[in-house]
Image 1 (spheres, one colour):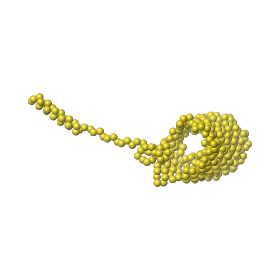
Image 2 (image 1 turned 30 degrees about the vertical axis):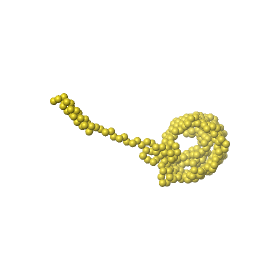
Image 3 (image 1 turned 180 degrees about the horizontal axis):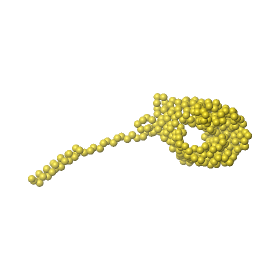
Length: 367
């Protein structure tokens, strides 16, 4: 065999082997297409489409640190602390989608508070508004509801929760809550709204677990003016309350004035009017002065008359004055601070008058 024949035979053999390996070669699979998260701008900023759906989701909340303080008669010789701190984590998850009946909304709002050393005090003394009240060291549902075509069901804030921007007033019930299980219908055109709700009021009487509230409100805005009127009736206490407020843009700020009337507490000493129990009637005002784009100063004053009640739950004598100021400062984007202080003069019939100062300092990071 010649060298030429040997080389040709080897080349043929190598070609055959290479062909066999080529037939067995592994071909890489095409990569699956990646579905990127799409921004949803139909409901405002912060929403995105849940991949594979037409539902828009918004995840946000805030982290808050408060230090409350108090000094004066209401904090002397009793169990009321003269300062206390609280940390709060607040998360909200909002889902929206279009339907043939309008926007379908669901909200899950969770909140956790850490404050193990809360004080206890008598009603109508410290803890009524700008301090923190009782001990809070809990995690739970702040709000959770479904909303469609003006109907809302679940746990959510009622109209009484929309109080003044300052932190010196008492505009809602002290012993109850503005967030409870409710069924509500509200018509809202943007400049005008009207609604009615059935609410399972927070229980203050352990002997009755069927405390139903009927609540209604109308309100809106006309030019630089805003207005709202709300009324609630506590079927267990058989008492109700009415609140009316107006606001107007005047100069570099907004003036707000409100009046409140409460028909009474209850003839049961363990139960209070679930809509307003601070007194028979009250008038209050504030002026939110926007000093700069970052700094707002809000002085406010309130008078509450007939803060005492007799054995039948009827209002009877006593009064309370409140005056204070709230300072709001935006440190940087999404980080704000708040400082508020309120002077309170509390005058119960047949008891020594009390005077004190209460308030808090707050840092809050929104996201």
